Length: 351
Ligand SMILES: [Cu+2]
Image (tube, rainbow, N blue to C red; front, side, top):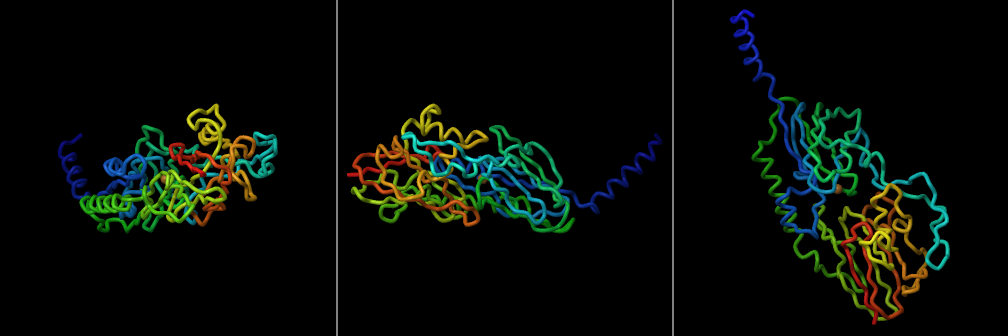
């Protein structure tokens, strides 16, 4: 090739660059950044994108960095978050309790994890979002790589985590070439959000609850939640009805589940129920409340001391209730778990 022509061509390219405005890539953590996660400790989560608001220009990309058990879903135009739990198409059938009595939920929908969420494999890939098609990361594996999404059109887009109902972020896309916050400003927004999350996490584990009430997790602003029973040990007099309640602002689902066995042993009664959350066919005994009429808890309820609140959440857009109650007449110590978060354990002592 003629060397002069090469030089001229190179000069033209160089001149063209400033006019094109370089496309940028900005990061958004899908969950709290590692340093914040560490400070929050094992029992507290921040179900949020960091930063929860990001401004880019058309043609720029957002690199969604996995940072916890969350997915990323940029819905198709006009749509919202996807439900994580959906009817599997089967009906519950032939389920009896340990005393041989059929459970009330025979004939109800069996539930499973939404395949649109769990079967997607978007982490580690690059996409362009136009609004015509949804972008879905799917569940993060242990070593999930970031998912990069190029936003081609100006607009305001909501990004969801379908696992945690309420966890969302805004990506504002300004017109191509328009000024957007600097990397320093973006880092400052993450820092501010992290500091607020750490402040909100203070004191949740010991938060005062109404009489005879146990909070299943204690949520605070910004998706922050202490994942524990509060109070962890409750003592009541015989004849007391205890209420298990979700707290306002929670993006988590929880249960209060009493039953025999070891939650960590999948061959035990309660362990099998907890384990089923890792399978496509979730045990209906985990999903549905064990009873729809008031019952009295005892070591022989349902033949083996089983009682379940069923899955509860604090969201208004789901059919799930936010609380469940059971009466305690028989003295003793009763241990219960959240079968979705098996490390959440509590006890009720009746004396
Ligand atoms: Cu989430």
